[in-house]
Length: 329
Ligand SMILES: NC(=O)c1ccc[n+]([C@@H]2O[C@H](COP(=O)([O-])OP(=O)(O)OC[C@H]3O[C@@H](n4cnc5c(N)ncnc54)[C@H](OP(=O)(O)O)[C@@H]3O)[C@@H](O)[C@H]2O)c1
Image: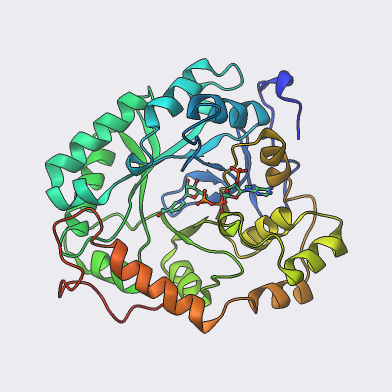
């Protein structure tokens, strides 16, 4: 990666390396996916969930490190409770102007449940916290039963008002996207769906469904929350390429056509994690990694989905609106 001290120069292309054959290349942030609204989306970003613990450096310091390392896409959320700190890091950053950054966030279930006015209020709160007048991307964090479509309608209005460029969803099963797209008021197809995706939770049917609808998948927990680095298959593939386990998981994610947005509180790991386009996994690597997902993992994912769609809302866990038969794989 470019040394942070070099900053961004006019006309320079991204920090993540040279153009990738067959991929879009944004003049600001390099390798990109083209979203269904025609805008470019960086292929690599930095996750800000738990960007600071109870002790140690603040989230502003950690996100400041990520910006200095060269991450230009920050994945934020109301739920993470640190948007003000992220805004502080952005305002202190000497590396990037606002237009060099790709700022994304999401509205949490409490506001989604409350309704459109609460969603509008939260969009304005995020804009203020991040010290900007425009978000590149904003998502409905969970498909709260009976409520999420209204939240999305409010996002459409925010696009019209010029507050947000692209909108999308997160944690949506194929069936949730169907429900959204079937609503007569929805005229913007979600640009992205942010879902958990890694070799231990590979969901090919869901990926295919999103691709068919023109929806780019952003992968969260692409590093499996740091809990897969001892896996023998991941380590074998890593040794074969002379890379680390984290880099193999990142490369797998990009090979699936997903956005990769790892989080680390440690600067050396931030540098390590971003080095994922300098090598390519082959068919054998991908087949071995794809096979790490078990039926138990898919069942656990389904159970978590059913809990999380009503989390922090008054809806009970046996609410009849909760979809029990989603496409898990
Ligand atoms: N939409 C959603 O519902 C949702 C849910 C979860 C996450 N997300 C988003 O996705 C982002 C990424 O997911 P995540 O933060 O949950 O998990 P993750 O990126 O898969 O993993 C983060 C964990 O891995 C460790 N780690 C990172 N790089 C490492 C390396 N090179 N070697 C060893 N350990 C390493 C980190 O520890 P250290 O910090 O100590 O390095 C941390 O414990 C989040 O930050 C958030 O923006 C979205």
